[in-house]
Image 1 (cartoon, rainbow, N blue to C red):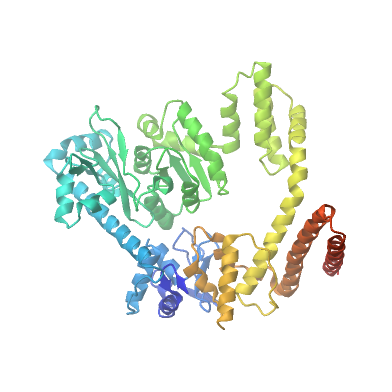
Image 2: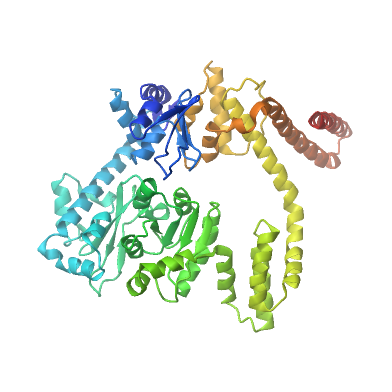
Length: 589
């Protein structure tokens, strides 16, 4: 069995020779309390220790920010490394020889290619930084002066300059990189059989990921006749604009050092740089033309609240409207800073100063209020037909809220905008929502309770709890849960016990979050009732399976033409009905 390219036996050896308590002790002060060890979490700012280290099972979990993992995960996070490099570091500390990746040669080749791109881009970044000090870079330095950027700002964002079409090409060749490697890294373009710097003559802003890898560049034109003001790296093995958040490395560092309670999302890099310069160290910008679900997921790991601070024009409002539902999918508290029309954060800071912008951010309105106000601006509310259309759209929007109290709050706002009484609007709200509620509420309750039962049973199996009996069908839908059960069963067939910490080898912390959460499942909240709760959960799952089977057979019965088959179906339905009654009676005891 292999985990992310390495044989799991080797990963076990890495963990065994790098005790998690000792490893974490190298970074923060660790204290034993009861069965476990505790420390201040290095991944968010706190004064009271909330990171718990399980010495027995060799994993950690922070009850403050929710981060968890094994010793490899800890090194990945604390050292800003990917999985391979974290394993490499721990292996070297234990004098273990690093094996070749075991999954296939393709993975190893891809890894080496990506690492080569990282190294090339890092060298290019440092070269651009040195270029900024040369006499030929006067135009770039004048622009930096004009933007009122200090040496600290230039250093923080590693700003540099491209001297021309062949300067960086010659430099990278001197470092041993091939023309093909430069093309793979998105550094060069080709014309008439010759390659040249893709960013020739531009002020250079390196794009750095959360692991502190330089993954690309954004080049700002300094001449007014340039075809495009900004030019970003093309898609490469290292750079994908749909998942890249500008300044995420700096915000991550700020979170670990001082703590942050929100993330400010701006539209452009210069806005972010201006924000950081003025003390707003929690500002980021999403690369690309629109905020994507991957951007939202990356941002959600930094804070629970986001403040959208886009330009105050119509384009900015439209971008905000599109970004809100994407962010809400990540369960974020989304607020909007309503900047004056036509102003962006950079302009606001120049004209009004940091204190004024701070007031706009402090008075940011919640996303629903923003959407209602913005929607109202699209209609002539003095016109009856327009008003009716607006109300219909707002009512549909309000019905996405979970509680009636929330809906009532916004009905007051809609009433002020339209002149229609809250009572009438409330009736519209109920009529619009009632059929939807009737169709979904029972289903939601069933699915929620089933999922809870499945998670508890899975966690109990994973942690080898003594009350777990014979295996039964779990009716899993989540592909990660299905994969986990297959792995546990295969280990059992080999006479092995699958350890909870092995989950970190075989599952991705980002895409398999549901499985990762099973490792740190809080059995203590159930206390002494775990055995009873397990039986109830098992019955819930079995009941779900029986009722589904009963439903299918009931649908088949009138369609079946053969009398004998009809009798068999009827007999099966009766047996299942009796089993359902038995399970329900057990639950009622």
